[in-house]
Length: 132
Image 1 (cartoon, one colour):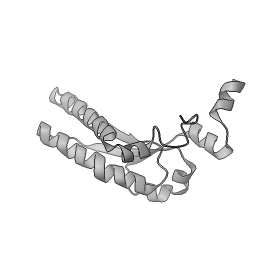
Image 2: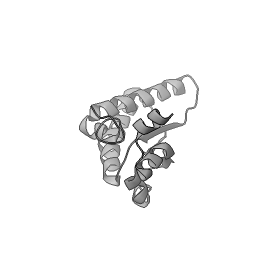
Image 3: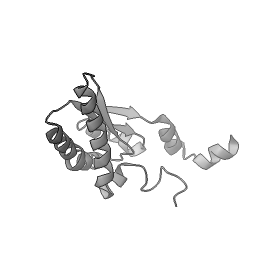
Image 4: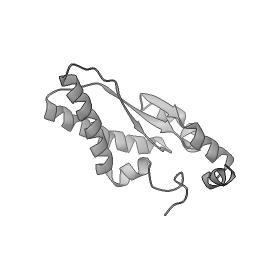
């Protein structure tokens, strides 16, 4: 088990690459809920954010192989469509260093300053817990 969720495989985009069915289920749930609300006359601004991205290729894989195809399946099943935005949480130093490339494939970026601070200063979350 990884003590530091910032390091390794769990919780981020790499989980979605390894197990695309997890992200597909989440996209399906989000878009289905939004379409159900649309049927009830409600308007929902949908934004899907991909976490823990380190480089643009990870985003391209998830967007092109999971998010977009799943969205098309949902739209076909409902016989309706909605607009939605795809973005990423900029939580790694690498993602920030390559933000110009990442910005070309997403609609928005959100910066995870807690995780970035931890990464830049090499702080341990365990140390934060001990000293708190």
